[in-house]
Image 1 (cartoon, rainbow, N blue to C red):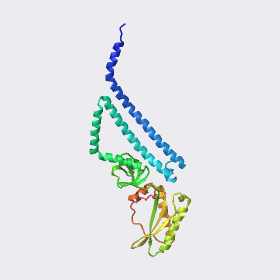
Image 2 (cartoon, rainbow, N blue to C red; image 1 turned 90 degrees about the vertical axis):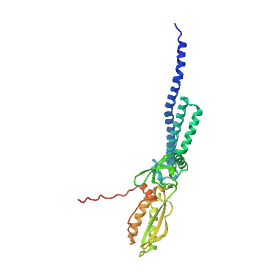
Image 3 (cartoon, one colour; image 1 turned 30 degrees about the vertical axis):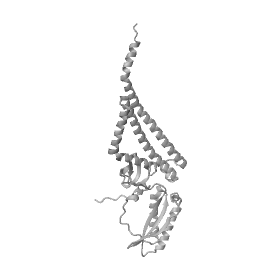
Image 4 (cartoon, rainbow, N blue to C red; image 1 turned 135 degrees about the horizontal axis):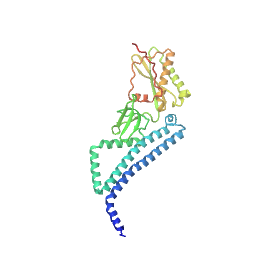
Length: 321
């Protein structure tokens, strides 16, 4: 019987130089999605554990109910969700880069060639894609410094509204009209955040000259205090209402300002309720209020209206044929 061991060994040795790199490249390409799935699962689980812990400490069942819990827990949830999105993006790019470098090495490209190519790529990136690098770095800093989070009401200059997604390059903001704005992080020069700390409800009322201004001010403050004392609104109001007095004087009216310090997520609802009560109480006291010719929502006022929990309802107007 002929000895075939030497022949098989020789054929195997001859085939390995050809199939070896192919098998290694296939293994790397197969391993990359698995690594990405594992990393993403770990990030999602960490985010979920932090969010669940904040909800458990605040004794609530969902994220929306956190608006009545201490602000600390709200910020943890918002910042963790934003960081989770950024970390997933960074991890995906790192896995792609490492996979590409490994495949090129297996193909036969030397390490020095890879270093040279990386240097040329970095130079081209610095010249042609510096805006992208700026967007990425600015996005990371905004999240790390807790400048904004998902669910925050912000004014970014180019867009004002509720933050729906914080990406590594672009932040998505939905305004009061429902338009979704994609704002490049590198173009954000300032961030006005209405969801951190506390908010202030500011209501200006025009009192006619012929009315008792002092009596009107007392009634305005009494109405604000009555609102803050009710159990339904007491959890949303921080501290006592303040009457700042006469804010300005025009040709027709004297403008009186009253303010209330409230929780950030309740600013819109408290402001609407306070205005309604002030209008009703002042009319009941015989103090007429000037007509409001036009209301324009813009800037931070427009952003605040996004979070209103009770949109206005209008009756159907019959059609005239």
